Length: 208
Image (cartoon, rainbow, N blue to C red; front, side, top):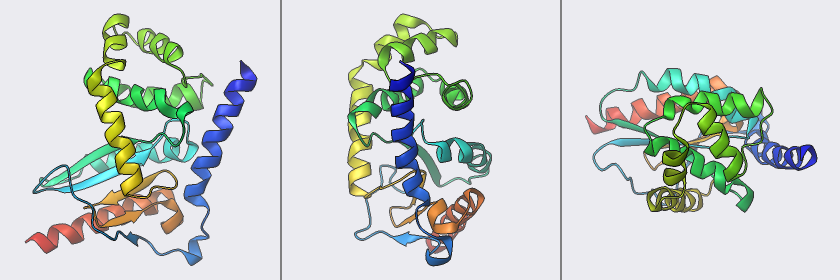
């Protein structure tokens, strides 16, 4: 069991490191998307954060993202997009959408803590459901949400976004369907958040 968990976490670490593979001195602060991607939030500037739970960089940047998103003005929509680069990540992707369906995304920090600080294996449905129940969620209600058509539909949409935005590593931020930035572009976690904020403000100014 420990070997399997290590293998899965190592896989997540390798994928997450792809986001930091570029030398900061050689990277631009953002990449331009071509073609521009359509928004699921018409009339608003949409910011997408592509992440996955076992990624240590996503864990590190999450508090910075949460602090920043509270400052977003009207006209800006922030959405987290859990990625599944392979089949072993599918259930963790569904974990996010099940929490969303139950209105319990406030447990997001606890998911990261369980994986990165407590060493819990939340890669499979059974372990995920057991963990959710340990957090006070009704086991059957969570199980129903986890296996629901709505959650599966959102997971499929997340896969489509990963493909259309050509996401190679996490965390990556997409801004207004026009730009991508990440710690590999800016050289730091805070730099990625700051660059996302700058691009949001630039797009807002362009709408005025």
